[in-house]
Image (tube, rainbow, N blue to C red):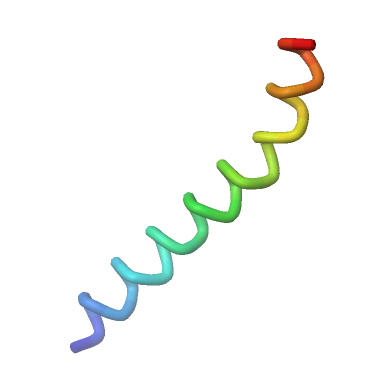
Length: 30
């Protein structure tokens, strides 16, 4: 259970990091 929760938090953290980087990538592509 703990391992699954940690894995989910890591996935969520990575997802948030990608979403935070997305506007910068789009601005560069413009």
